Image 1: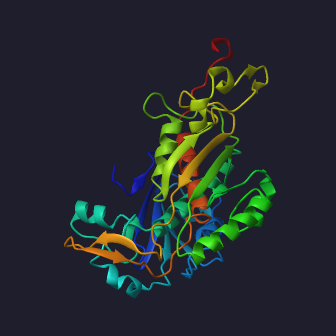
Image 2: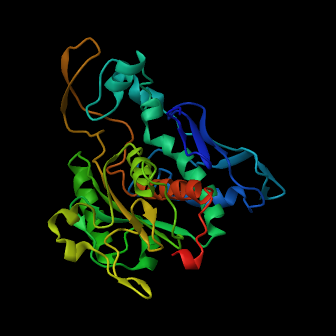
Image 3: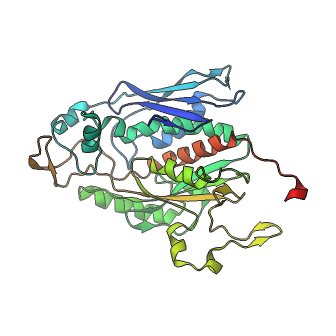
Length: 354
């Protein structure tokens, strides 16, 4: 499968570069007769776009246009094509980087693979590519909503500051999408400290899906958690994924980690809603480790294209952290995975055979 395509039945292909004229996505396999308007997609794009108080000053309206696949407000079952124009491009900010590799970026690996690279903001390796993912995820959200499935992501750690409360309504009340009001305030303060130091910060985002039926996922190599981990790892800033208890399970005993079964269902959810690679009807819970943004004002050692050692300070317009803009991207990838599996026929087991 080409590297810019994702999914099997609900399949998306993103296209475009950070400093090109536009970027977008084609969605193939979306069922017909689903209500869909540009405003449905725009809501999610607004949460991802730059220009907020804690994000890059690049001012992109990120207005989406539906080019195909929708008629009279309903999906037709044919490919849905979405386009988002780049309006605030300043490629001159990258002129001096044409001959220098940026530490922590994909500059050198792209050139080693393809023999050339788009040095204007990283081209396809730019986080701007994720706008297409978020747009596709919004379409998947409309499809999954028919089945009572909801997906939310939120910040649980940022710059070493951890959230402790879980107020579902608080997530959209602060710009960091944090469920803990006090922690959100401390995170904002920490980000300002990091910004003034010319540095960047990483964090952890948690993603939760509610209302998923049991039976999603295919043994042995197409497990739901395996596909989800791959989807989340495909996000450029993500360097680690865990499901349920994740790495904490390594320090637990079996008697602690096993989720007891009761006549009403599971009494715990250390499994994160997935057992044997198949959804069990509980909440699906995943977390991602987000690395610090590699574009920083501090001096960094690197080399030029001809191998000459040099020191670089990266200017231009950059986020201090991939959080909060990565939060709707994480949602989108879980939405796309679930939409794809929901199109797989679920086995119907007779009660007497259970």
